[in-house]
Image (cartoon, rainbow, N blue to C red):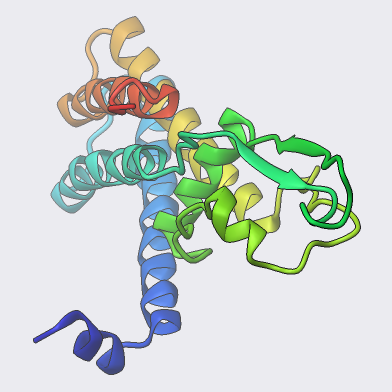
Length: 208
């Protein structure tokens, strides 16, 4: 089945809603299950956890971290400087050019994470300068948004849940002895995904 046929069967809006629902549910379960386990590990001497809770924590630890890493890895990486003309080349003898500043590193990565979460559509390829010249020239160049959109704030909240719960599990695994095995495993899994997410965030895996 071709991609176009699949798009006809499952609209993009439905895929985005499904993706958002699954990732939000996973983040909530991650916060509740692992967060409860960390709190009980700190407060109780020998806490006992049901087997279903142990399995859920092990699954969610890698899942939430993988989503964050994938979001940072798919964030748009501007490879060229965008230029815009103030008026048509044939209108006057001199044509003023100015560069369009690309979004900040944090904004790009949060928008990439928001795209993976299903909050926004994937970013479209950047238009070239020749493509821009074929369009009617506006009196003012298109300005970059100074504020982050709502989708970026939701992605930031998702990352905050992942980071805070994970770092708490890691600190408890290092600081307290003994500690339940699945809490320690979740903490070390978080550390591994955090390192890979940091590589993706900084674009160290890009081939520019």
